[in-house]
Image (tube, rainbow, N blue to C red; front, side):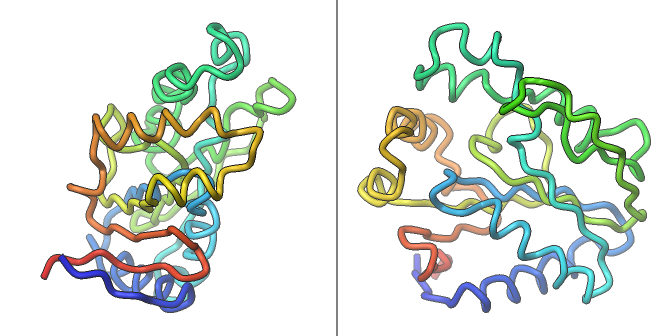
Length: 206
C-alpha cells in the first residue's frame, strides 16, 4: 500500500478524470463517503463543474437532505451514537428518489430538512442518460445503498476527534463502529486520507 500526497485541486482533477471516463453513455452513481470533518460534501461539490467540462452532467446530492424526521432520529435521545449510525439516514428515500428512481432522468436533490423538520419540497432535477449523481455523507457504504463508484474519505481516530466540533464529539464512537464493522477503506474504489483536508493523500495499492 502506498500513500501519495496530493493537493486538493489535483485530487479533484484526478477524480474528475476517472469518473468522467467511467461507464460512458450510462448513469453513474457515486458515493463520497466520510465524516463531515473529512469534507465529503465539499469534495463532491467541487467535482460538479470539472465533470461538466469533461462532458458529464453532474448533480451533488448531500445525504443530509435525506435524514429521517426528528421523531425517528431522536427516539433514543439526541446524542445516541448507535442511532446516529444505524437509523438517522432514510436509505429507502435515498434509493427511491436518487439511486434507483422510477425515472432515472429525474432526481430529487433533497427530501427532508433536518433543521426545520419539514419536507423540503425541492423540485426534481433532470439528468441526461450519462449524468453522474454524487451523493455525499457518512455511513453510505456497506449497507443497502447501491453505488457504482465508492470514494471513501478516511481519518485516523485522533484526527477525527481533533477535527470534530465539541458539540458533536458524541458521534465519534459511531465512526469507530463503522470502521470496525464495515471497514470501507478495504473495498472502496478510491480511498483518500483526510487527516487534514488541506493536505489529502491517496491510498493506493503498491
